[in-house]
Length: 173
Image 1 (cartoon, rainbow, N blue to C red):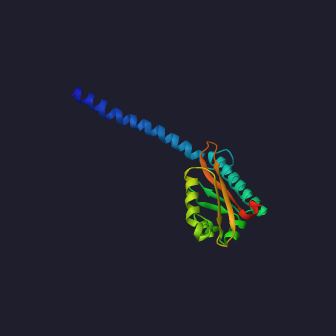
Image 2 (cartoon, helix red, strand yellow; image 1 turned 180 degrees about the vertical axis):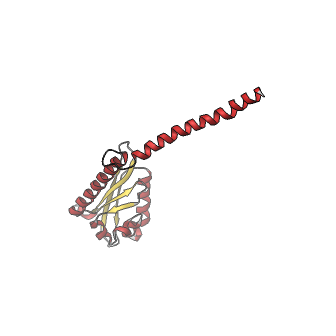
Image 3 (cartoon, rainbow, N blue to C red; image 1 turned 60 degrees about the vertical axis):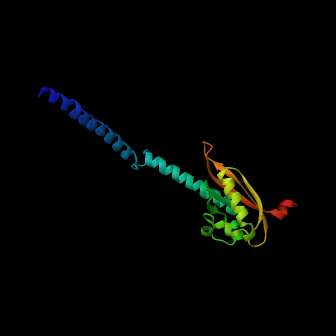
């Protein structure tokens, strides 16, 4: 009976007891994190995250407002090449709404004869994480130079692209 009791204690009771101790420690850590994720008027982690989110959103809105005020045909895409924002000027040039421009909707503003080559080159530039620069025709018949650069985070990871269109004919003069 003594050997069996020792075996049960060593192989069943102690491991279960240790699991309970670890679970209690983990629960304490979870409670601490949960408490810090509740807004408390300024010093919690949630408050800090909210401040960063507001500042980021305000910065992006200011940039979009500046570009709109400058009346430039500019776009912003994510790291996969999907349009996430287009300036009012670009929407007017393309004859599309902001929502229609999103994703790859912008491609419908490119002349049908140029669409495949523009899409292929854009996809290649996104995949290779490099600049995009290409002259192509729009559906209105205007020859445009579209070019973009990669936007990188603090760790040099590409997080998106910013691009601008210019009239290719006026650039050639």
